[in-house]
Image 1: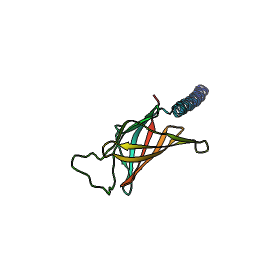
Image 2: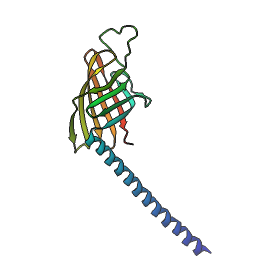
Image 3: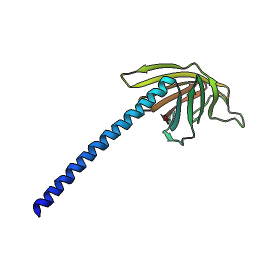
Image 4: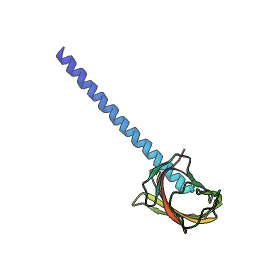
Length: 167
């Protein structure tokens, strides 16, 4: 009876080890497929970035809902982002402080960095709420993670973190 229990226990350990290795391999395959999808989006310059963290200058970072986004497709940019920071120009009544652009043609500059496994992007756009010229710089990592910085004369720069949506 003792030998039977030992054999049964060792069999269970071997089965668990095999399933653990299979799970690890499957996770690696899923990760590799995700990286491949991100690279396809980068090669097509077809990006939809969901913002999940706001980093205002001089204050603590804030989490955000996924209602904020940056979309780049066919040389056009659309975005809706919050603004938190100081301004040197007055805000008139009824003006929105958010940063918005709808289907604006942009000159997208892109540079790949294989060492850091990321691609750098740069483009300028006009904020439709206040007729301001903004510069957007972001790093898109091969795993889909994005670090972005927006700057404009008259306002403090603001940073964002997000993820590339590939589905």
